[in-house]
Image (tube, rainbow, N blue to C red):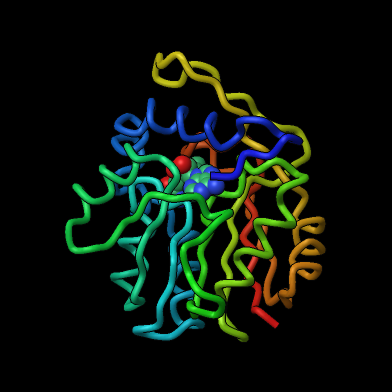
Length: 218
Ligand SMILES: C[S@@+](CC[C@H](N)C(=O)[O-])C[C@H]1O[C@@H](n2cnc3c(N)ncnc32)[C@H](O)[C@@H]1O
């Protein structure tokens, strides 16, 4: 674990938050992709770009819904999450898949090990000053030409989630400017392939636009 002096405790705060809410989060989002055809289309396109049977990591996988979708699309995918409670739920709900606990800032993988990295709403708790390091870590574990899919809320102001489902925890969800993220990806050794921004879907409780960046390791 690597909490830095610049942002003391952000990994611990993130892990504590998701450990507390894991069961409620999983129950809320279980099977929610049936009602998200546009997001599923992007995941399908991603799976097609990477190619069947290629090794992919779903980093910050939570309860593993997206990991399972990607596996059903033919990828050789495993999930990793900081929160032990999330990993336990993912293993319970998707017993045929592999899930590991750990930090995506420090992946236990050799350079170039993967054909794909998916970071689906998981970079949103990494402070701005640690983002370049996070994107370099994604780049390090990808083989040249490997595919990154990055999903996040678009915007500039964070949204503070206080006492979700009545649990005594608080965490900021950081929104980001897609153009700025694209520039950071370039700096980290990626070539941008596609930038999709869709409008918020109120039926999903979204307050801001959602961004989906596809990039290839140079
Ligand atoms: C908003 S949830 C998204 C979960 C899942 N990708 C989904 O879409 O349902 C963010 C997840 O990222 C994980 N996460 C945040 N920072 C992480 C890190 N540094 N390493 C590994 N997982 C992290 C959290 O524990 C949490 O499960």
